[in-house]
Amino acid sequence: MFNRLLRRFRRFFQKSSTINDEPLNKVSLIVIILIDIFILVNVFIGLDDIGRWYISPYQSHGCYTEWQSYRNSTAPQKEYDVLSQSVLNAQSPDLSDGSPPDRSLQAQYQRWDDEHLGRPSPICLQYAERYDALNTPANQQFVREIDQKQIEIGNLEQANQTIRSQYDSTLLEEIAGQPRDQSINQVEAAQARATLDANTQRIDTLKAEQAALRTQLVMSPEGDRFLVFLNDDGQFRTLEQSYDRASFWYPSIQIVFQGIFLVPLILIAATVHRYAQRRGYGLIALMSWHLLVIFCIPLIVKVFQFLQVGFLFEVLTEVITTLLGGLLFLVSYLYILAIPLIGFGIIKFFQRVVFNPQLQAAGRVQKSRCIRCAKKLKLGDRHCPHCGYSQFVECPNCHAPTYKYLPYCKECGTLQQPSRR
Image 1 (cartoon, rainbow, N blue to C red):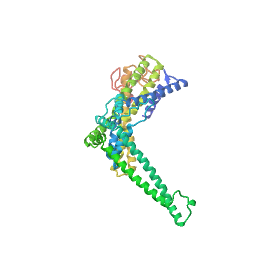
Image 2: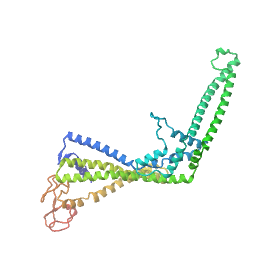
Image 3: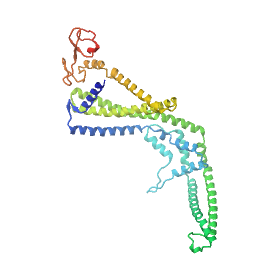
Image 4: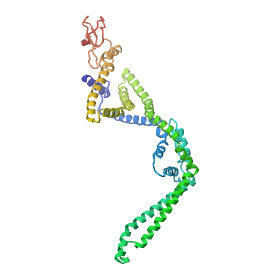
């Protein structure tokens, strides 16, 4: 079995590096390899582009992540946070011509709708409508004033922190009677105390003003309408179910589109290769063979992605670990036992079904081709002129030459023994 696989690998590499059974020179081989790399890179780029053609769950359900974050948030002022963030996201600096760029969420969804197959979620379109409605001059002014007051609060708190760090040493200097001009601190203890009290009072006032502005933003018609929509449990559950379905089917949809991209390339390369072989066009046969191999590489990768082999191994590991009570070394034992068995089964399948010598020989004899290398033979050739393989074996009954691997003698029809095929 190993020798057979080894012969097939040799045939594969021989077919990839020869023209009409003559080896390529090094320069030509390097050129072909460079072409292969260039085409393979572009094939993967094309697969990535066509895989993104259908609208992704993130694009079709763009509001889901932010909506879920809002619902899971435990912040005391999460209503204001989501409204202010919506207003800030909608603002943008003016362009050189004085016109602001379109940053509306509805425009973004429309752009995704135009650039991709599929449609955005109707619920997210409603979300975007209410989201964009928040961007009014009054709401922008609320957010700017709140931010300005927050900056002032930060400056006052920083000043208080500096004063507190110096207050104790200033007080000790006054108790010790140290002259003021020899002090290392900026203010006296009494003045520091008064400044701290004034700053603290100002901070409390600013926070109260901030709270009032937040309340005005939350109670605004646009803010109230948006929050009512966000707190609708039925709408969110419907969106969540739709998002889960889209996420589940999206990888399969991607692979279907990528298959649509790859399959025509494979069929064209295979057709050209067979035609070139029949006509004896060596260079075209070689190039088309390389293209066929290159186009099949991404297809094999995508098939494994579709089967989610890695995911299946993860699930299997979790199940086995649970059954074995966390004894991970036993999982390794099971893999060591299972993988060779699976490999043995795969090899047997290919040996008996895909690469069965009898099935191959029957097809090649009908097409007047060599039983081993499948090259074209002339009528009556007993040995292949390409690989030297003998095409016949002696029949034990009539002693006439008959085809190897075929079940019956072509002269007398006697059933051949397996050992003689």
